[in-house]
Length: 260
Image (cartoon, rainbow, N blue to C red):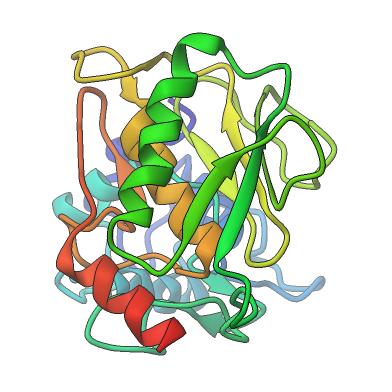
């Protein structure tokens, strides 16, 4: 996994210099926690500096970990997991602490217009047909707890679903097996992309990712939800192999707060 190296840095803290810390900086930059100015001497080195310390503390607060500022066992364990590619912090706005209890929204609370309650969706030709029923059920799951209805079409849709590898033209390239599993965009963009390099499966299998669970997560983003701090929520950013999750009260509370 592209994130597996983080587990080997368990115990690193402010003032340490260890090979691989620059990778933690890139990780936290990718998900919005860290930003270096161009002339900062520690922007690309292996020194655990004050900026990294502060970024780790914010990350720990977002994921309800002990706020220590160091890569303790719990923090390194979560960071090493595969996850959704949508950042937790966008343009300096921390999506995960802007609203409580634990759900979050995009920075400008992007959502579908009030009269737009029926959304059409289209599968691109690169979507493996064996996964389409699982994604259909994911849309049905959200329809059962929201005001939205969803209908599959063959052209001119509100939402498009695709499977891609590497750089696929949306400015957010996938990173191969492990790492980022999928990503979506805030309303009303409508794009939902899965990393084709991942081992997918419709159901629970120890060495596969459940496409149904992750589709529900990504649809949550399409509707306007950010990531949740609740480990059991469908909008928690991380997914393990063989893990299946469902929409939880925190997810429902978030959608209700956004649209009511």
